[in-house]
Structure formats: C-alpha cells, structure tokens
Image (tube, rainbow, N blue to C red; front, side, top):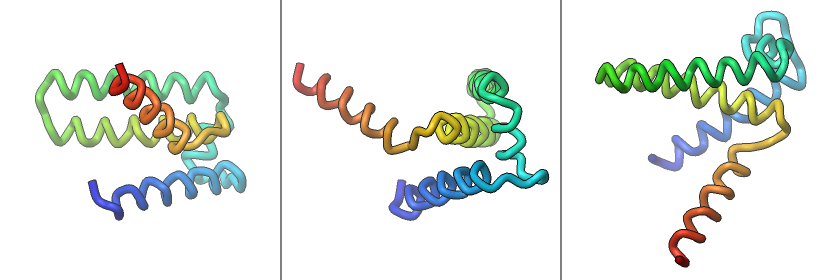
Length: 102
C-alpha cells in the first residue's frame, strides 16, 4: 500500500463527513445516514456476508468489489458514530504492541 492509497482513504473519509454534514438528496451517503444506525449496521452486515461468499467462491474481482463496499460502509458507520479510521488504526496498533510484548 502506498502513501497515495492511504491519502485516498483520508480523502474518502473527508468526503463522507462532508456529505453527512451537508446532505443532498442525491447523496447515497446522506441517504444511508438519514436511514439511521440500524440501516447502517444492516449494510455493514450485508457487505460482510457478500465479501465472505465472494471469497468462498474464489472470484478475486468479486472479492475486490465486495471488500470495497464493506470498507466504504464501515467508514460511513464510523463517521456516523463520530469516529475516524485513525481510531481503528490506533486500536489495531495497541493490540499489536500488546501481543508483541507478551
């Protein structure tokens, strides 16, 4: 993964927050958030299952598509919960560091 890949995730996170803060009717992100946290949770679950099924089928293009959908929906859920990808990264680092110390 390159710096530009990481920068894109940062840009996408910013775009998601902008669409939540200034919603328009044609924004899928705004529609998801307006539908409420249960709908967001449902979408994350659906995309997770679709990713697992694509993986089991062994179709790499479908895996990429479904992983992309899952990551996007997770990012929307995080933004709706006033969380950032950095919060997730920090937790992953802490877990890694704790495992390395043991």
